[in-house]
Amino acid sequence: MTSVRRSIASLALPWLLMTSCVAPAFTTSQYQAKVVSTSESVVSSIETVRLALDLMGRYGLPKGPVDVTVSAQEDIVKSVAGSFSLAQPPNDASIELRDQVLELLDEAQAMVEDARIALRQGEVQEAIIAIEAAEDVSKKLDEIATRFSGG
Amino acid sequence: MGKALAVTLGIVSSIGGFFDMGEIVMTAAIGARFGFGLVWVVVVGTIGIILFAEMSGRIATLTHRPVFDVVRERLGPGFGAANLIAALFINIVTLVAEIAGISIAFQLATSLNYFLWVPLAVVLVFVIIWKVTFEHMERAIGFIGMAMVVFAAAFFKLGPDMSSVFHHIINPDVPNGETTATYWYYAVALFGAALTPYEVFFYSSGAVEEKWDRKDLNVNKATAYIGFSVGGVIAMMAIGVAALVFKPLGIDIDELSQVALGPAAAFGTIGLVLFIVGLFASTFGAAIEVTLSTGYSLGQFFGWTWGKLVKPIEAARFHLAMIVLLILAGILVLTTLDPVKVTEIAVIFSAIGLPLTYFPVLVVANDKSYMEDQVNGPVLNVVASLFFVVILAASLAAVPLMIITKMGS
Image 1 (tube, each protein chain N blue to C red):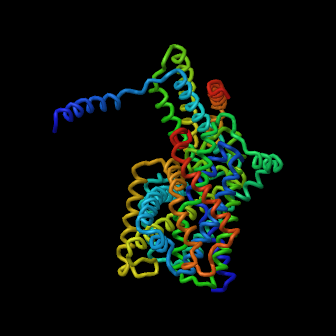
Image 2: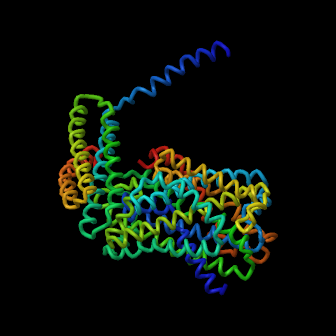
Image 3: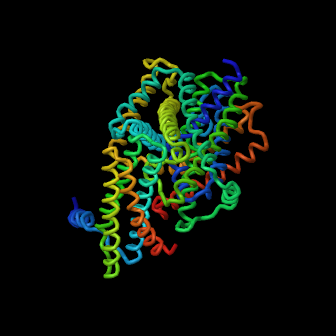
C-alpha cells in the first residue's frame, strides 16, 4: 500500500465513524419540514386507528385484522416520535416547537397504546373511547403541519 | 376446451393477473394522497399493457417461440443480456413484494406476525408451480382473484358524487401540500405498476407451453383487450375507494393492512374478508408468474431446457433457478424490508427498465420474417410507437424524480 493510500484510509475510518454517530444538523426550514412530516405521519396513524375501531364498532369487524392494523400504526407512531426526538433543533424557536410537538407525540403514543390494550382485552367501546380522545391531538398536529407547510 | 370457455378463462385470469402488490399498494397510496388526480395514468397504463401483452402473445403464437428467445435472435445477445439483467432485477424486487403480500394476507387472517408465514409462502408457491397444471392454476387463482372486484362494488356503495369525480378525473390537479415533482413521481410509479415486464414474459411463454396456434389469435386478443381493460377499471375504482375513504381523513398508506379498511368501510366484515382473499390470490398469482417468468427468461437466454410442462429432471437448471430465486426473495423479506417501500421500488424500476423490454417486442411485431401476415396494422403501429415515446419519457424521468422527491416523501 502506498503512503497516499494509507493516509486516505487512516482519514476515512474516523470520518466514517464520526458521520455514522452524529445526527445531521438541521437548518430552520429543514427542521420545520421534519415537524410537518412527523405531524402528518402521526395524524395519519391516529386517523387510521380511529377508522379501524369505528368500523369495528359499526360493523363488528373481526378483532384479528383490526389488531394488526392498530399495532402497525402504534409501531409507526413510536418510530416517528423516536426519530423526531433525535433531530437537533437549530435555534430557540425550534426548541419551543420541538417541546410542543413532542408533548403531542407523547399523548398520541399513549392514546394509541390505550386503544390497543383495550382492543386486545376485547373492550371495543373502551378502545373507541381511548382513540376518540386523540381527536384533539390529531387536530393540533394537523394545525402545526398546515402552519409550517404553508398549506 | 371450447373457445368460449378458453376466452372466458383468459379474461378472468388477466383480470385477476392485472392486480398484484404493485397495483394494490400504488392505487391505495395514490388515491389517499392525490384523490382522483392520477386516474388518467391507469388509462394510459392499461392501454400500454394491452398493446404489450397482445403483441407478445401474437409473437409467441406465430413463432411458437417465446418473446425472449426471438428478441435475442433479432436484436443480438448484447440487447438480450441488457433485457435479461433488467428483467431479473425487477423480478427479484417484485417477488420480494409479492411474498410479503402473501404473508401479510395470512397475517390479516390469523393475527400471527407475517414473518412467520414467509417460509410457508415460499414453499406454497413452489409446490403449486411444480404440482398444479396451468389450467387449474389459472382457473383457481383467476377466479379467487376476482374478489378484487370488491373495490368496484365498494366505490359505488360509498356513494361518490359522480359529477365531482368526473370533474377531478378530467381536470387533474396537484393537491395542496403536494409538489409537481411528487405528482409526477407517483404518476410514473403507477404507470410502472400497470406495466410490469414479468406479466408479459409469463403470458407469452405460457402461450408457447400451451402450444397456441393461429386459431388462438382471437383468444389472445380477447384476453388482452377485455381482461386488462376490466382490470384497469377495477384499478381506477381502487383509487376511487382510497380517495373517498382515506384522503378526507389525511391518511397516508404506509401499511398494507390500511388498504383493507377501504372495502371494509363499504361492506364491513364481508368487504374485509373479500379484500384478504383477493390480496392472497393476487399476490400468490403474481408470485407464481414472477417466479416462472424468471425461470423462463434465464432458460430462454442461456438455451436451457425450460418449461413448467417439462419434467423437472429434464429441466433441472430451470427449476433450480426458480428455487434459488424463491429462497432469495424469502430471505430478503425476512430482513425486515418494508413491503410497501419495496413495492414502490419494484414499480419505479419497472418503469425504468420498460423500454428495454417493450422496444424489442415492437420491433419483432413489425418483422414479416417472424410475423408473416400478422405484423402490426398501421393504426396499431402508430399507437404502439407513440406509446414507446411515453414509455421512454417515463423511464428517463423516473430516476431524477426519485431523487428530487426522495422517493415521493
